[in-house]
Image 1: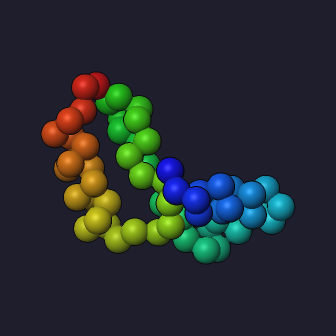
Image 2: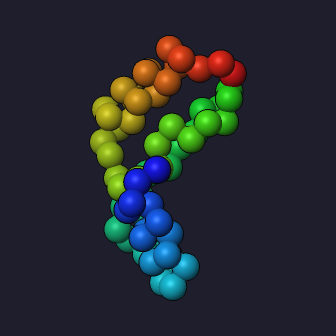
Length: 60
């Protein structure tokens, strides 16, 4: 999704637990299975807003 994603995944492969320690958010739609967000930690309010936006366009 973003340039940070590749870097975080690479760091995790070399240092298991890196993503957990440094905060990462990944979630996908339960209906269509599209990744809605995969990136640095975001607040629960922002998470809900992204989910709300996705639901409006979801084809699942």
